[in-house]
Amino acid sequence: MSFKGERMGKKRMRVYMDYAATTPVDPRVLKAMLPYFTKKFGNTMSLHSFGMEAKKALEDSREAIADLMNAEPNEIIFTSSATESNNLALKGIAFANKEKGRHIIVSQIEHHCVLESARWLEKHGFEVTYLPVDKYGLIDLGELERAIRKDTILVSIMHANNEIGTIEPIEEIGKICSEHGVYFHTDAAQSYGKIPIDVKKMNIDLLTASSHKMYGPKGAACLFIREGVKIEPLLHGGGHEFGLRSSTVNVASIVGFAEAARICKEVMKKEAERLTKLRDRLIKSVLKIEDSHLNGHPVKRLPNNANFWFAFIEGESLVTELDMTYGIAASTGSACSSEKLEPSHVLLAIGLKPHEAHGSLRLSLGRWTTKEEVDYVIEVLPKAVERLRKISPYKGGW
Amino acid sequence: MERYLPYSKEVVQHFRKPRNLGKMKNPDAIGEAGNLLCGDVMRIYLKIKKSKKGEIISDIKGEVFGCIVAIANTSMLTTMVKGKTLEEAMKIEKEELIKKLGGRDKIPPIKYHCSILALDALHEAIYNYYRQNNLPIPKRLEVEHERIQKTMEEIEKRHKEFLELERGLLK
Image: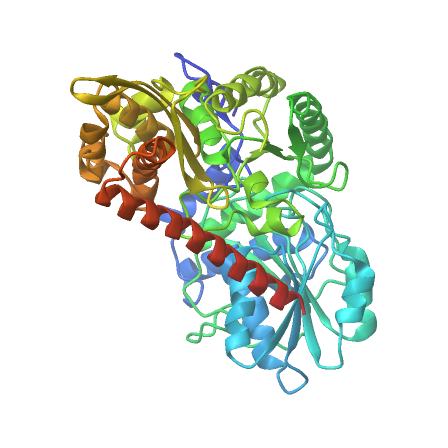
């Protein structure tokens, strides 16, 4: 089941260090999915045995997904993506609770799908507070409590940040929200399956999780909605998913998502320990490069996330250099190729200047990352940085 | 090379083995274009020799803070300019540069602006050379200079507006 053979091509190394963008499907997951494309292809709404077979697979999957976050199966709504789940959480809660109030709180470092949903709600009569974060990307609990008003209906703060890996104090946030009678939603797309989540203990009302970030297929995700939470659906139709998400159910992908969750549950503790060691080895070595800096928190971070900024160079050319010359797949918060002028909003929110944020590099590890791969990156990254610095107008300083 | 489909082989070659990039000691003129805020800055250094034909660019160096296309086109431009007179160098059109880099359809549309920035930096260097030496500045160069400076100001303005928007959100 190792991908090593394919990964380390015969001619040169190919190292995937972008697991935060997406992960390969675990072969065990693929195996579990395959029958649902051909033999067990039924529609979960059909009354015959084909339908019942599909329905059974759907409900078994619901149980596995709920189990990994200590939720009840009937509190899991399957969707097509974390983006859809986050849209449903924000807009669904806003529209169902607008009689109570029209104020929502999100953090400034949320994923675009949360921020853009919040901005869309602003256009439709809702008020949004965008909570700032400190230099590590952590929100301030006191500031959150002060931001909560009588008309606040929802707080949405991510569990772990996709760019810098910072883990927010969601148990404390959950406590504050429950004390104030405000719904708490957390986007756990990057953390579900990687670090423990207990929606009961953490007082979470809504939680987003995604399949393709945890070795499941793309096209499946879920929104946990605590029983009793008032929410409106976005998709109306045949009444699938307890009437909250009409659409013919994507059984094969959901079966894969569930199998991925079962595997994560089994390996989570050991894998988190293994990746944390590799991550810290990587961080320690990379920071030996002159004028390099760590983005995010040194300890309160995802086991698989390392994010740096290198002074005097631009991140996109660094990603290209790592890819073309060294076969390493990484990512950056620089925005040369995006429509927007500004680099990553997350890096700006933690206080980086635009030119600093342009020099960022995210390396995210995963199930098939080996020590050899990490050491290879440690060996060649300084060369890549050095080559680009040599041709930079800022090599001697900004 | 097929693996890097968005880019032409010329772009890839000039990115991997750039020509004439690095700092120049004692240049006769320096020009700069782009903005750190957007993540693209090019600097051009010129050495100028006088000859019968006029002022000749006897040596050129470029420095780049930017993406693969930005690096490749600065490198390519230096090869096109070296040995030319200032008059000739000024006549190089952006389409010519883009063509040399494999053509428009090989450059993602979003990257057009970085394909032109090196040319802007060259024009600024030539402009600065004329000005420092109290030489008459050709009308076309004057217009170019104003456009380049205005673009910079606009970027600064947009950035300021962005910051104000962010601050507004914090309220």
